[in-house]
Image (cartoon, rainbow, N blue to C red; front, side):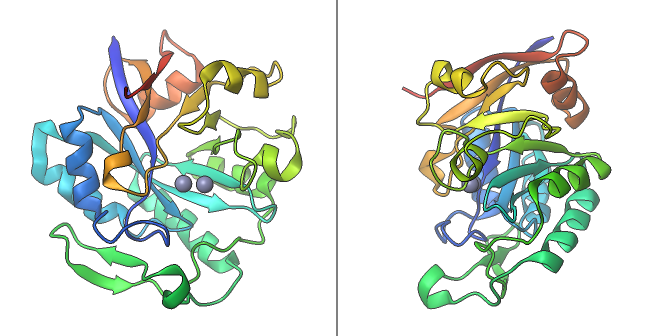
Amino acid sequence: MRVHKADLHLHTCLSPCGGYDVTPASVVGRAAELGLDIIAITDHNSAENVAPALEAARRLGAKAPLVLPGLEVTTAEEAHLLAIFGDLASALTMQAMVYGHLQGGPNNPDVFGQQIVANADDEVEEFNPRLLIGATDLPVQMVVRRIHGLGGLAVACHVDRPAYSLIGQLGMIPPELDLDAVEISWRCAPEKGRELLLGRELPLLTDSDAHALDDVGRVWNELNLESASFAELALAVQGQEGRGVAGLGRRE
Ligand SMILES: [Zn+2]
Ligand SMILES: [Zn+2]
């Protein structure tokens, strides 16, 4: 068992607010330089840049972090929820459901920029035509249930933030919600984050939520794991078999 560094909330050029240089391959490369063991690619309401990230990791070989497929889903309450999976097929099934419930119509590139689906060679494959920054009409309860139905982990995003978080939108983390973990933003001190849990027994994570390459790995989770795998991550958030969140790290 050793400490693995994990940054589980990373955007690419597919996200409306992600820079064009934040290609999936460059994110994986940056994470490898920083010595991150596990990353999750979590664009807004889409997993279309996960496959090129997986391909980039395959090409890097042993230096590459484990890349987990994910999405940052916007619920009907306009709260952000990370859906993290162990395999691409499950993430794409989640994506299909999210696409079916996205509100807001087509993207306006003049306002939100182009949403680039890239390949592992940093070339543009296509522009996603949907307004990915928009909300779905799926209540948070249903999103959590669907994530679990596909074997994924459901993490409440950046709960310290006044907008687009469960606490920001609903004033609380609904006690009946079967979350796997709660995330605080890179700005938030862990002690403050624990206060926000109001005594609930949920693991506290922190992620960079990077939309720019320089922000990848600005904070991370230190996880006690046997190896870098989704199954080990799941054990860690459940605090089972000696796995767990050992600490939250921050770049100086
Ligand atoms: Zn968010
Ligand atoms: Zn995000």
